[in-house]
Length: 302
Image (cartoon, rainbow, N blue to C red; front, side, top):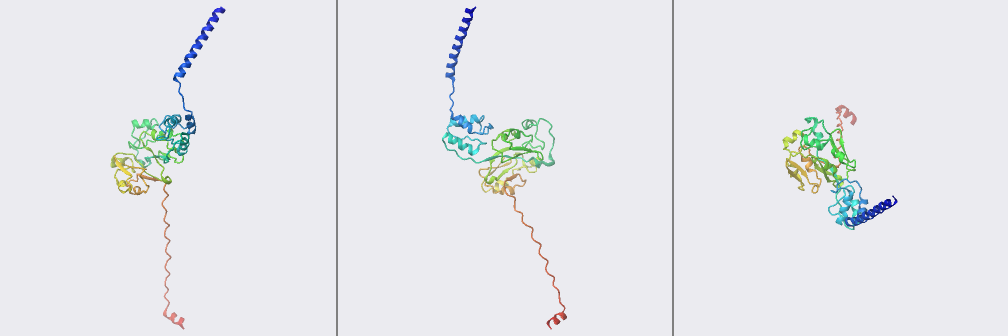
């Protein structure tokens, strides 16, 4: 009995040693040597894993930076220029300063007013609603108002306005990660440069229908008339598929297009309110002339 136990222990011990040797050689064969610099870059990143950089997360972004050796074509939107400067210092390369951006909602469903043609009573998801429904206003391009963009934002920078059913972006919290833009099935949300002094001019409409048809859904829809493009001194406006678009890289925010747009589809943000001219002061009434009788004038001379 003791002999059998001893043999079993020896066999198990030999098998253990054999498996350990096999595992050792397998580990050496398939081991992956990771650059410790990846950990240093990952520690600098905000850790939001928002995907705004186009990678699968902050770790993947760090691996891409180290593997490439520079930050060309790579940018962490939540971190901005501050994080980019730290990463470039670790990599020992220069980095170009990018223009700060912000998410812009290019739709204004509030202008539909009482033109809502139906009420949706189904799954509250823009992605789902877009496949089965045109929207309460009948516009096949406009915001559906279910809040998929709000759920996608990890920075609490976008909320639905209950009065208008429109998403509103908090520019101070927005990191321009692009998650809200990706979540919108109708591409209503766009990332644009904040602009000098955070002043922006953009077309708040994505409707590509002809003018008369678009106006049936929204009174402030772009009708593709092209008046804005004609007055733009920088040729920053193009009209394609009945829709105007302002190139924020060329726009100098002169706002000539804003005043020219007949439907008020072009919005200007961040500009000071026009000064109110003081009301003219009422003129004082002229003093009435009192005629003095001739007899009184003679007496006064005497």
